[in-house]
Length: 137
Image (cartoon, rainbow, N blue to C red; front, side, top):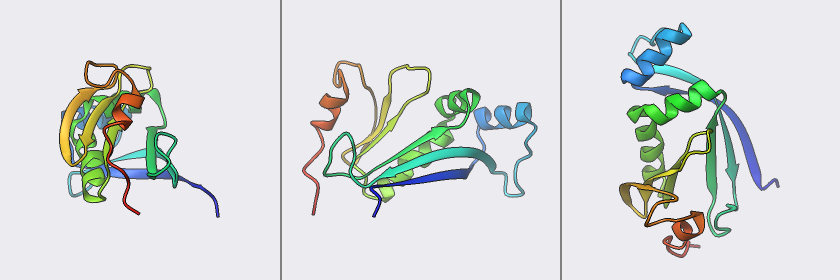
């Protein structure tokens, strides 16, 4: 059995200003329910995370730089990823953009947050992972 699963996805998001602007400039029409389809979003599921081998991880990234900037601007995109993390019992939702800027921790140990990696609380990923509880077996 492979230790990873690779996916190419399109994800539907409730429209917010950033999503509407992106759709207009990209020539996309909202769906009948008002949501906007964004894709490809690439995902790698690791059944043993690089950050902490006791956890699985789902790493998603945008197919283009423009889409990556959209991910950084859209509150509804961030909400979808944070909500999925919370609903699945995930310990951490880390949100970054492809330009190498600091990553934002959106969900940590059962609570929403807006801490930055490379900030005072989490100077690096190692400091972030140190706050995770021992994984349940």
